[in-house]
Length: 225
Image 1: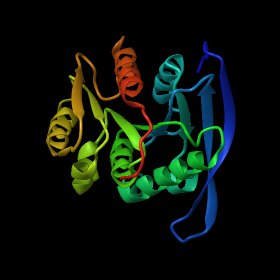
Image 2: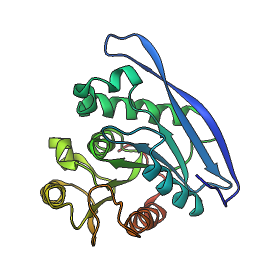
Image 3: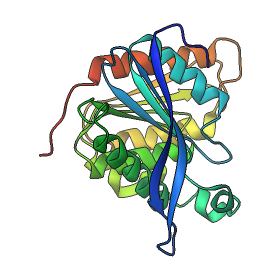
């Protein structure tokens, strides 16, 4: 991830607990442009991690818009080896909630408006977390499965952008259904020619541009209702 904007980059450890209640930490990378107008937490999808080149590319575009990012692993390596955990939206949302609490506890990030960026199953976790946490100011899903957020969709009140590839037909259909159930301000953006991973030339760049514009427009401080 190349930084052309002056930024502070910090390796962090996010405290959480295992399914049995044992304490553990999740590694993350916190990047704060100087100055930062907001902070976006990334929730990756199945088979991915904080090292995802697609998420790191999007993060780099956000940095150019003076938006900080936290890329972190939602699961430990051992947990991720169990496919049931990868699709446990409640667990993923809990981990994301823990990351929100973590950045709220740090002096440098406590006051920054918060956004959530989710891909695949991470998008559902982001929406569940947003429904729980009224201080989340905006959500973006890229190639996500917002339908897996279930009843939480109707409780989301922050502006939400769903980005889907035009050739990702099954996921696009599921996003359209989820879009109808979403509460609050919302938009469904279809990137022509893109498949699920946005591997086609120019498609990931377009998704990143859309995400940066959404966050730049909507990252304003929110207070609990």
